[in-house]
Amino acid sequence: MLTKGNNTKQFIIEKSKKLFSKQGYTTVTMKDVCMACGLSRGGLYRYFGSTKEIFLEILNEDKEDKDQLLIKSIKENVPALQIFKGFLKDRKETLILGDCRGFSFAVQEFTKQEISQREHLKKRINQAKEGLILLLEYGQKQGEFKIFDNECMALTILLFLDSLEVNAYILDFTEKEVDMQLDFLLQLIQL
Image (tube, rainbow, N blue to C red; front, side):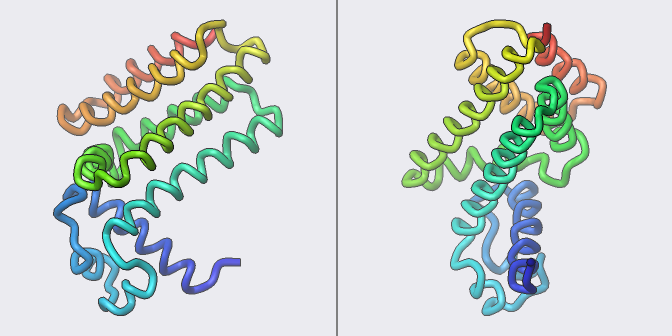
C-alpha cells in the first residue's frame, strides 16, 4: 500500500528526472527541486539530502522496475519478440515524446562529476547487459531470435540505444528516423 510519504517521494523523483533531463545533472540544485515540486526545503530534505541522492534513486528505481518486468514476462512465457518490442517501444517514447529526452546527457554528466559513483554505474550497465542476455537466450530457446554471441549482441544493443538517445536529443530525429533505427535492431536479432 502506498502511503502519502511514498507518493511524495515518487512525485519528487518524477519531477527531478524532468529537471535533470532539461538542465543536466550539475546545474540542478535542491532549491530547483523544491520549486518544481512545490515543497519547502524541510519537506524535500525529509526524503532526500542532496541532488546526488535523488539522481541515484532515479537510476536505481528505473533499473529495478525493468528487471522485475523482464523476469515476470519470462516466467509468464510472454513471447521474447513481444518483450523486446515492448523494450524498444519504451525507448522510442523516451526518444520522441518524453519529458526526459535529455536524461542520458545527465547520466553522462553524473558519471563525470561523481567519480565515486563510476563503479555503481558500471555495475548498473553490466546488470542491463545481463538482462538483455537473459532475454536473448530466452528468445533463442523459443526459436524467435537468431543464434549469435549474446554478450556481444547485448552490449551492441545497449551502446546503439545510448548513442541513439544522445543523438536523437541533439539532432531532433523524426519519429520515422527513430523507427528505422529501432527496426534495424529488431532485424539484427529476429529470425
